[in-house]
Each structure stands twice: as C-alpha cells, then as structure tokens.
Length: 401
Image (tube, rainbow, N blue to C red):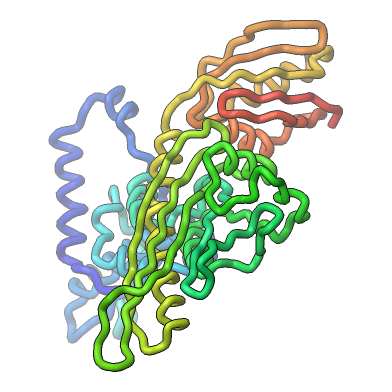
C-alpha cells in the first residue's frame, strides 16, 4: 500500500507540537479524550545507497500503516473484510496520518539493505470506526434489524403479479427480490427466509393479495420475529424504443417501503428504475428487474442503517418488569449488572410487589437492542428469561442458574 512518508511524519510532528503549545487543562482533556488503541508493530524500509535516514523514515511510515491496518482489521468481522478487501485497501491508501495520534520508536536496527524499527503507535479507534462505517463495510459489527421482504413481481409473461405469501403464494424467488436480498445481505442485514417456516405460517386469507397494507405486512413480520418488513411492487414492461430489427428496450421499476414492526413507523422508501436492451425478451426482462432490485436494495439499506443508527444513538426510556424477585439477592445481582452496562443510565425502581419489581431506565437504543445485550451477559448463579419485548418495554423472569 503506497503512502506519502513525508506527509505522515510531518503530520505526526505537527500534532505533537500543537498538543504541547495548545495543551488544555487536564479536566478538559479527559472530557474530550478520543478513544485510542496502542499497538506495537515492526516496520521495514529499504536502504538505497548509504541513505539510512531515508530508510528509517520509510520503516517508521510502514510501521504506522501496519498499525492502522491491524486496528482496522480488528474492527471488522472476517466475512466483511473478505467481501470488501479491495474497498478496504483503497480506503486506507494514503490515509494513515488521519488515524495516528502519536508514536515512538522503541528499537531500531540497520541490517545490510534494510532498516527495521519497532514502533509503538496510538491509533484513533473511533475515527476508524466512523470512516469504515461511512464506507459501508462496518455494518456487520452493528446490530442490524432482521428483515422480511414482501414484494410482489409482475413479469411480461404473466400479467398477474406473483407473490410468496397467502394461500396462492409461490415460494419461488422473484428476480428483483433476489438481487434486492443479495444487496441487503452484502451490507450485513440478517434476512428471514420464509422457506424455513411452515406454509401455514403465511397462509392466511386476509393476506392473500399482492398488495399488502402496512397492518398486513407488520402482522406477517411479527409472526417470524422480523424487525423490519419491506413491502412493495416490482414491474417489468416493454418500452417503445427499438433499434433495427431485433433490439428492444425493457424497463423495470421497483417501488418499496421499509416499516418497523415494533412502532409501525416507515423508515425508508424508494422507487428505482432500470432500462436494458436485448434481442431476447426473457433475458432483457430478467436483466432490467435484476438491476432495479439491486438499486432498490442499495437505497433501502442506506436509509434503514441511518434510521437504526439514529435510534441507537439516542437515550430512550425503557420499562422492565422483572419477575422472580422474591429472592432479593438475585434481583440485586441483576440490577447491578444492568446498571453497569454500556448505554444505561438513570435506573430507578418504579414499583415493588411480592414477586415482581418494575424498574425504569434510559438506554442508548430501544428495548430490543437492550434485550440482545442482556442475552450476552453472565449473571452469577441466576439466568434470565426474556419473554416479552416491545419498542420500550421488557418482561424478564429471573431463573435459577
């Protein structure tokens, strides 16, 4: 990976100079401190002629590149890194200086044609996270909603729209839906596959229509614990454009909306068009529906992520009803753990009954995100059964560990 060595070194020296000259008070420094990670790496630079000083600069710069890359790799799930490896390299190329707070050389050694250094570097983890997130390759690390797609498709060969739900449903994946789903999966969204459920789950007469309303779609989504349902239509049609004897033009249109199942709030909407030309109608229709589905997936993914991130960044009131609290020691263990969790503040006891306590708190996210976080916690000598989750409400039973 190429990098401007002089730029890196000058950037680091400038930062040190500014930190000394304009050093704020200790209290202000602590308040405004940006999270960093300290990492030790080895850098190598080739010696050309007898210019060891230049080789040393190269070795330090290469070490800083390695430090930033190592921290970035640690932030990404392996599958996300593999899928976006080319983008990952292109993004970080020449960007090292943005993410290094400072460094020091712990050891150095000239060896024949190379110069090797041991560098201890402090890397801005928060800046890296934002950088990778904005590029769309850090989504797999975050909690993303489980999605159920409910889009009907109308092809030229069949004037009636096809759909997979209801008694007349066909589970064969529509062309536009296939590429839309693939796009969402590549962004890290967990997708609900209706083929994994019994047909009776979706075979309801009230849902036997290609054009579901919000209530119908949310009802189906809740049956399979979807966080978001995407509803809409996909249509392919011929255009009047013709070139020569055989080449025709085809247009595909995907119109879709994303709705939260807990609040019934619309959080994304898009209408995407694609036009292709082909001598073969079947191929032309497939290509135009495929392209439109992919474009719709990109647009929806971006909007859904923005909505979810906004929700996660806000502190929201959550009420928790805790059952099995006759053993106050167990309840205090649970209360202590949840108080210490990241994103929790202002926990208060609202009501106490014989075997039930109602507590309220503010959480940086919604109740579903809090429930997911609680499932990963270990409670000494007790376990938890989360049996009801809504947007701002949880019901939890304490059970013997």
